Image 1 (cartoon, helix red, strand yellow):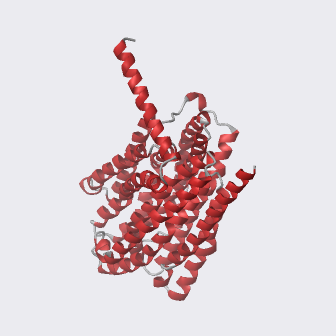
Image 2 (cartoon, helix red, strand yellow; image 1 turned 180 degrees about the vertical axis):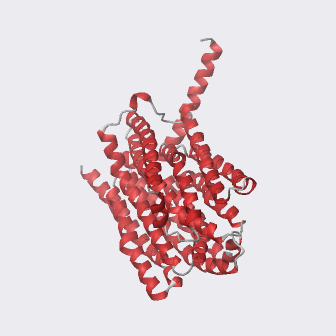
Image 3 (cartoon, rainbow, N blue to C red; image 1 turned 135 degrees about the horizontal axis):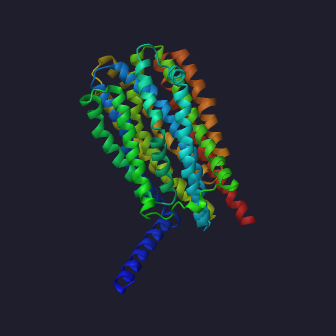
Length: 468
């Protein structure tokens, strides 16, 4: 190696070390509000882009002036939620262990966990695709599709299942990048995948005349592009950790940690999917156009959802790192800063969407009935936003700490003890206009419960550490 090559190599190593130090500083020492914003805002921006996956499909299908195809996209959405639920099991479980390992200065364990996660990603996506395709008619019927929407829903779901590897791979690889503090890299795949989806949707739906099938194909191709972009950072050595062939064999310890933390995270998403299906089946009784109206309102709400999910995902590696480092004072500071930032932001979003509800619904449909119903639904469900962010942040903090039993407890209380019973009760007593208020009531209660649980646990861990 000549002097110039040696100098270039030294410069590259210094750059890599500087980037590594910057990531660790954000996790360990940055001021709480600044750390929350620094880790959360890029994810919020990326998730805003990612939400376009569903909104773009809804928008272009809405241009066909076929409310039954519009309803079919909404009915099929729980399939993607199930794919994300299983991805969440792997990504959340692995991310928690990776962040805690880095905080405890166990880099080899972190790299081993990363490698095993990619193996689990491939195996789980194949399982989902095969099982779903074997029972496709039964699955579509269970989603609530009726005579006018069954065929459209079946077409959309079949393609979603065939593309399971790309949807799940895109989601998991983004989570793994975030676990080491590589936030900017984690959103690159989201951006490129969504831009491709926006370009391909009108091509497949209109130019090639594939209608709802074209929307599904564009979504899968977008996810595929996002996954390959995320994986390319590992291949080009732009990350703190890298998968290694020597670590392909899982250990009992790693699998136990991934599933111990990940399974409750998966059950949370699966229970949300069940609640979503119950909600749709109740709404169908009031007419399939009401399902279309609810679908549009839910997709607009997803803008607000992705704000709190982005901040919660950004807080997760900070909490995991500092739990591994036993820095409990910083954890409490991050919790307070996170609740302040996310609740304040969501209040602004709720106000804007409430004021402009008819205009927002009107972007996706010209049906006056759907616009009126959708506006009523949107104004009601937007009331969850000031509360649900703190609940999500608390749940993900429990997962980051390797305490999934608390996260799962929040899920059980939220979905089975409160939301579904309130949904059924409000539907019976107040009808369609009442059932849409079940979720805001649930989230207001859950904010108080979850934040108190997390604060108490951190204080308890701090006390045990000081006494030990």
